[in-house]
Length: 150
Image (cartoon, rainbow, N blue to C red; front, side, top):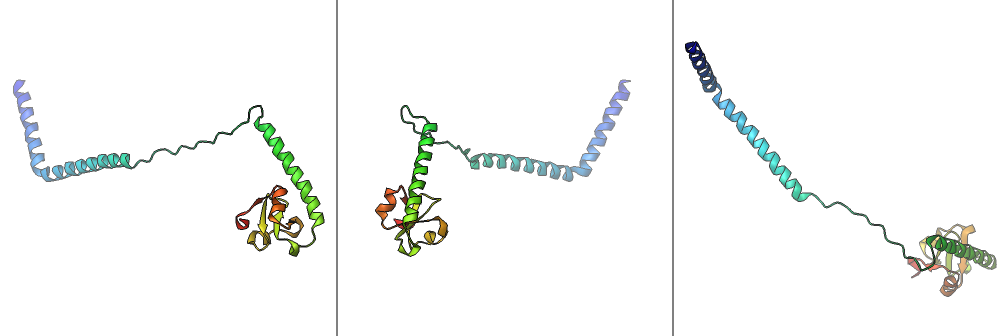
């Protein structure tokens, strides 16, 4: 039995040697290509870690609160202030006459005033125009200057 096992082992060694001699170049070339692919992949992973950006962190600004006043009360106060402005605007609108008499103009729907020749002022609809004779007049009514009015 041991002769059979020895003969079987020699036979396998011969087959492996014959296979290796026949396909040696192709086996070495294939192994080389696989090694190059693995090394390239690893280099790509390492380079990717260098180029990876830090995560974007978005922080919401903290609201300032006055002692004893909640944000809901602030909202109510600002709404009341806007209503008062619109009431004054209606009074002002009734007292003013034409668009040509205005030095500064504002819209009922905005809190900014513009110079008469500003391109934003020209886009205000006729029914929404509020006229002011001076910049001081507009500020007293609670309006702030737009970019073209500065």
